[in-house]
Image (cartoon, rainbow, N blue to C red; front, side, top):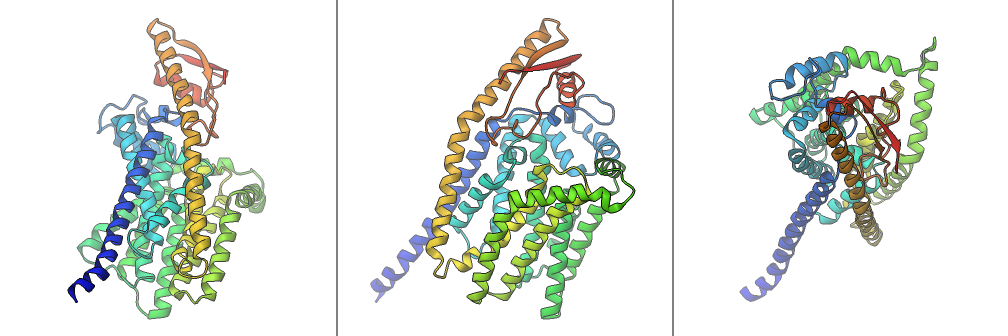
Length: 453
């Protein structure tokens, strides 16, 4: 009898151990992947600018110098003080430190998306699907994952937003309410910080929190006081960010100066529609298909409701950019991840149905495509990195010889994995922003660049 029990239990235990081992090996593999591409990402554009204090324009050489710089940043640049504090901190600590920390944050971001949507522990295929989807679908991958200033803004900010939604998912879908005790109280400042991270991602997160609270009150007549306080802290941080004088002035300057509200916002709205068709239509159609299939197979109403909320908030995050005339594609990160999360939440459910072969094939296809994309991009990205290194050596050598007006070359992107993708490098105009901050960083009077690549 004992021998029979062992034959039943042991394979299951071995399988669990193998899954756990494979899950952590995948995490290590993803960390190394992100670390390698971070190594091949030179400083770019805003990086040169954020190496200096916004308070007195001197190079930041101490931790204490970060604080007056960020105060001035709030007044004169924008209200995302936490993101830019991280950026200036990393530039002060140095690129080697950033390479390690940022690779860790990238993995933490993917684990946040996984935790938000997983049904069980150590689901290797779901984590692989998330990694592949992000590598393939993010339109400006390098600006979000590898560019120092961009990563501190969009990757780190998105990671904070996604992890802040996990307790709300657990409260609504799993019935695990956080109580207002010491652990819950310690989390509240995180929501205050989260509120300052993104002009379009944060309102979508707050909207999702509100949806969860309304749903719980409507279905169960109970709601956690902690959830309300977390939502209020997020809102307070968001208002603080929006009240930045620089943010208000910058937003007004990007809109068309017409006499009507509609006239000033019609162009940004059309831009949002164009981007939606180009980047979010297919993920939205996938979600609608999975939702219909899950509803037909009577998946938990709580999961269906939460997935719909994620989708609606993702779309809302995207079209929130109608409020401004400036919509860089990297600002689509939270919107895309919410739309993908709406589908990913349903994947473990429909995987238990006749769609299992299709889901397995899609997961394999996405993972292999992402791997091939990385293998293709690695030598191209290294080539761009070496070009940037050569340019830096040329500039330093000329400066050492006493030259202060430098003529160098422009670097063009070869894949979305390098930091030059969808960015303007040095130009032939010495007064262009990238030229000016590059010159200041290397203590030059001016720099101009011709097109070499």
